[in-house]
Length: 64
View 1: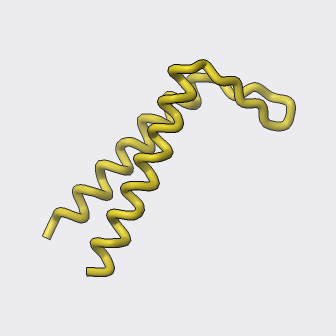
View 2 (view 1 turned 180 degrees about the horizontal axis):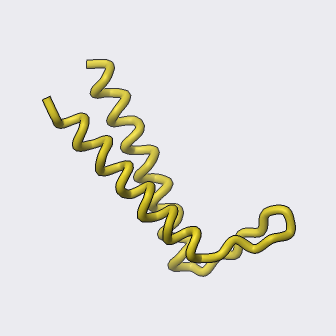
View 3 (view 1 turned 135 degrees about the horizontal axis):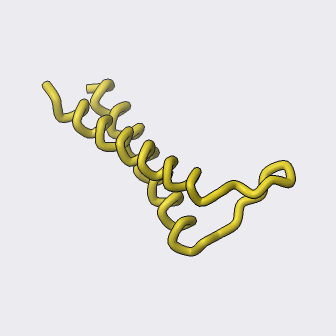
């Protein structure tokens, strides 16, 4: 039971991160870290990676 709960929480967190990357991409929000502008390509990569991780967590949760 604890494993399923942990996987669900991880899946929700990764889904939230994917949504934030998607919103940044849709609204063209600039992010500056240390004076450097982070490109939109990084958000697209973050979107894909976090979405895949979220799907993986939910699939692992449902796997028995």
